[in-house]
Length: 161
Image (cartoon, rainbow, N blue to C red; front, side):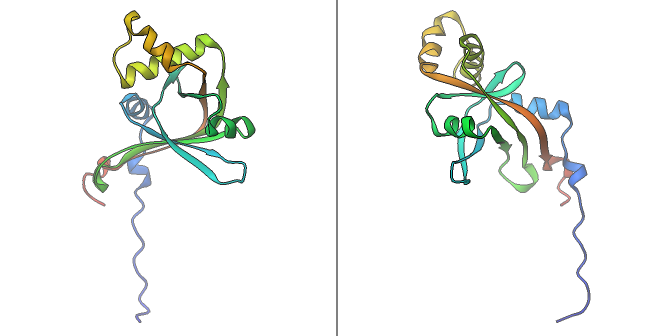
C-alpha cells in the first residue's frame, strides 16, 4: 500500500447553489415532492405528495387523520425535497426545512386546493369547483414555514465534475 496521500475531491458546492429566483422558478414547475415528518417512535415518515402554494409558501392538502398530519400535530418539524434530473449532470433540487402549520380555515384550504388542482389537473374555472370541493372533503392543509433552504443544480457544472 502506498503512503502517497490521495488528492482531495474538489469542493464545488458553491458552484451549484441556486439563487432565490432560481429556487422560486424551480418550485413553480410541476414536480412531486417527498415530504418527511417524524413518527411517534422517532423514525422518519416520508411520502410523495403533490404540492401547491398558500400565501406564497409550499403547502399540501391531506386527510385530517392521515399519518403525516398526526405526526405534525405531535411534532411540527417537516422537511420536503423537490428534485429533478435523470443523470448526475442534470440533477437539481431543493430541500426545505421548517415547521408545519396545520390549516383548518376553509378559505385558506380552498386557496391551497385551487393551487394544487391547477398545477396538476387543469386550470381552475368555476366549472371545476365541484371537483375541487370533492378533493378537499375532510381535508386540512399543511403549510410549511421554511427555516432553512438547501439547493443544488448540477447543470451549473457544465459537465465538469
